[in-house]
Image (cartoon, rainbow, N blue to C red; front, side, top):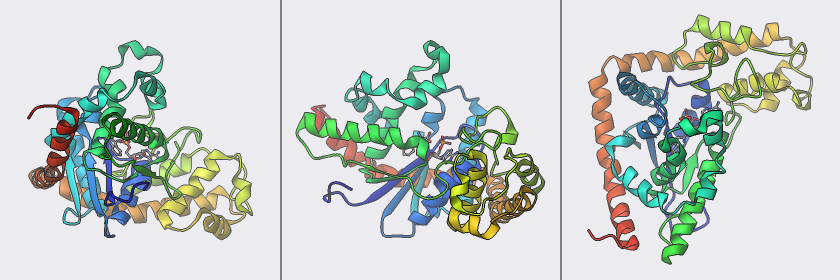
Length: 338
Ligand code: AMP
Ligand code: TRP
């Protein structure tokens, strides 16, 4: 953190736009769980308003939001230790986002690679919300004066934009009001790749289900997906450097490393020289051992949607206690009469 006057606080979010993947787990949720046990306050959010920047079926969005919440709870997010809620229950996010829309510059938004990827060739048909999305993300973070944001590698540029917005706001109004947030991108799981193409990120919305592991996949499906995962003819190399230029092989080693909580170097040392016929079943067994208890608990929680809703509503109340005074102060700084 660049300014010691801000108390450390962690915020992160995940979109309910499809089921949770192993990428979400290793890149985000697993690390969020680790962070909630320290001194720092932790706030985790199902960002439903981000999800609707592309079309969401209304019933699917409700179910998806509950699934994300169940996934976080089942993975070990403890609503006593962390604040857990869904974004749309705290309207201050959108209020602050509007102010940031007036701070962020078009030139900054035009550089956002995620927008370019998602809008594709048909950018004229993308929603205005998809374009403004990073400004809402900055509002999510800064509404809580969050100093640290644990995310996967793909979100780095958005956190940098958040820093630019905080700096410009502070400069424009001559205040030291918003912290300059640090992205926290650490560990082997910050970029889990597609199982069919090691140059693309594993995502909820990729075309084929074979390219990702879903948190709710059963043991047979997980084994089948790893068995069919693309690899090269060489197995696990003798040394870690032997993974250079082999994205698919490196991805499987990284996944093993993230799940086992050991370094990728240690994985290579343990399996040096092994063929895929040995490594892939070991990886599948490890994944099932780690994910099955989580998915069983997710299913149990999802059987009682009212209880999930109650937890989210309680989290939203607690979030608003932090958010309201920060938004009020922002309005005062900007000169909006209240
Ligand atoms: P999303 O599913 O896009 O809302 O992402 C939620 C969180 O999961 C963000 O912190 C992402 O960076 C992280 N994440 C999503 N996919 C991956 C992946 N394939 N590898 C690592 N992290 C990921
Ligand atoms: N944009 C993030 C993603 O696609 C989700 C997100 C929204 C987020 N608001 C956030 C992540 C605030 C961290 C902090 O993954």
